[in-house]
Image (tube, rainbow, N blue to C red; front, side, top):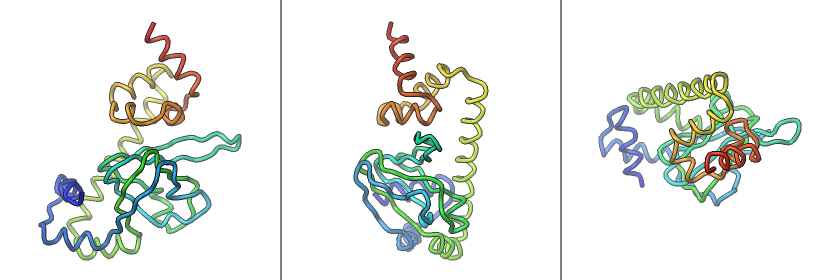
Amino acid sequence: MSEQFLEHINRFAEVSEQDFQEILTFFDLRSFAKKEMLVKAGTRCDFNYFVLNGCLHMFFITDKGTERTVQFAIENWWMSDHLAYHNRSKTDFYIQAVEDTQVLSITHERQEQLLNRFPQLEKYFRIIYQISYGASLMKIRFMYDFSKEDIYFHFIEHYPEFAQRVPQYLIASFLGLTPEYVSEIRAKKRS
């Protein structure tokens, strides 16, 4: 599994096999069962998670008690409340395993040590954060520009790896829809 992490790093920055073995010492391998919480709102966000296998989702709970998913992460994706992680502060979000999931986790302090030891990884993390930020902007654009039905079908068509693995109620939550509405538009498409 560490090979997939090395391949991912080398997509954006170069590290040797020897350096990679030392890089791995900065991370902890952790496993989470389906529905297990990695992070709870109101606690410090101490870790940044790289998904080796499985699926995570990040969500918050509204004042009315509704869960709103803001992000998913599958293999080769990172997940954290990056602002709380950076500030070493409490988060407003929950991170939960959607499936049995295995991650590499790193603390803020260890990540800073890692970047000091391997400055080429600054480029890697910069590109990862740029991609993540760009994806967030596109989601906002779709929320403004697309009809609710179009948002759903765009997601299903462009992100089949999520559509096939993530329960419909979580997809609905991520897209700002109700599960009932998703059922309606899916039934309408079938007829």
